[in-house]
Image (cartoon, each protein chain N blue to C red):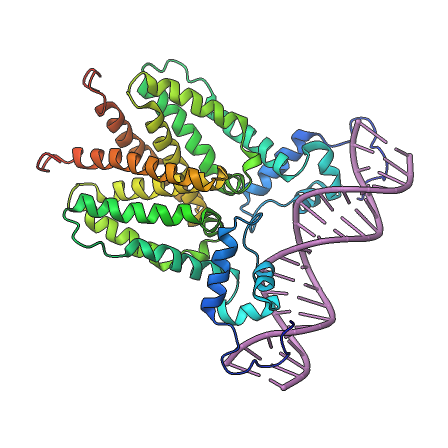
Length: 193
Length: 193
DNA sequence: ACCTGAACACCGTTCAAGT
DNA sequence: ACCTGAACACCGTTCAAGT
């Protein structure tokens, strides 16, 4: 049951990915206030301190988790024509990630050092896409990202049941469509939006 | 220095308002990860347990703080004609409150039991106002509230300096105006928006 | 290199006093 | 009614081992 004291045998040590996977399971269970280093270590059958070699500290763990969770928003969708459709897909996937682990999103907001690099990639791509359909790409980028965060965090406050999550996703898409209408409508030169 | 052990003399005990005021000071200092019962008690020169008779538990404290901070959003503005102007004033004040103590907002999202009653009043008034200028008041209510939350919380992540806060307020107003354009524009029957 | 145990400085909260 | 001290079950993290 308890692990040997010294260096583990070849292939017996836990990997960084083992830690991240266990952390996501813990977050997925919506366990209490969420993720702690000690609870995570207990689930892995390991002392808390052994985590530090792999993830740095708690902020490092959160950052690694954010990277892993949010990177899926950047998945290339195949055969999606038009900036609007691509923006829609990008934000829908990002919102899905934010809403899937609201406790993680909350923890990241409370731990600025944990802000993921992949988030900057997402906003950069979003800005580039917006620049092609509006004169105010930065303004709309902030609006769309802030709205996605607020909508995703409402899941944390709502103690969302799995059934509600689908509803929330639909509601988000509705809201997003209205916002994209506004983005297109706000540009004089766009061909009918 | 240290307080007597028994019941304090007349008028010597701390009041609930003393606790809330000290908590806001603590939050305002952006102290570390924020508000703890023990740090709050230490600032009041009191043992942590003495707080519990006044505010219940930590969720109760957060709820009381949220009520006190967010209620200012409901201040009646004098001589503000038109639904749009009233919505603008309501949301601007709400966003100001959310952004003034982002740590509090974050803590409330993480503690759903702490959700303030005054928040429901704010959304109710917002819905009533929206119903008079759009066919989809609930959809736009969610969009506007989620956006205000996301924008306010960005302050927590950004470790905002006081100077930046003014900029953020201006940026929010710009964004809000665009969104209100969209609200008005989305209704066929409105007289030119 | 990778894990352990003990330790330090914290948490929120309950409970039995004390006046 | 209102505050205290001791206690319980937690936190994140450092440090000196152990293999």
